[in-house]
Image (tube, rainbow, N blue to C red):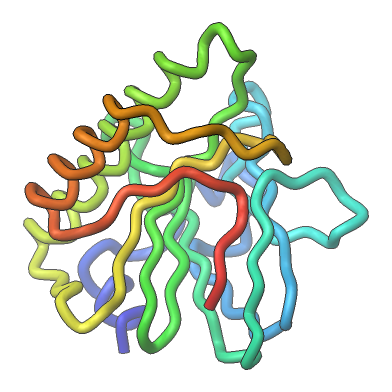
Length: 178
């Protein structure tokens, strides 16, 4: 139902003539799958890959429910719109995902940009009548990193502001569970 609503409101891939993309929407029900966001110069959207391929995000789908990947950046939305890289959802959970690669020194700036991209994407959906109130919705900033970092107080206040403004929790990590 959500996939049909998104397709009705936003259509499909806007870059089909210049991309390897086979469409903005991809359904998968594997127990484990992985998302790879190519380098910006590749001008390709995110894609589902195997564990042995380069990836930034791992998805655990314990009950093998059908999950929909929506490729938003370099696919569904035009370049002139700030947006996150992808959406992932099933019947009860909805994730907005922005994947960033950075060295430690640029992480703060990348995080700030990611928060803006996630917020803009949420606003686009809300402004187009997409109701997320029946979903456990989360915005995820994904850095490819296996090390856990302590949460800083400044990030907690940003997370609280994000939750109040969008009614969507803001987290950082490279694993999602359905």
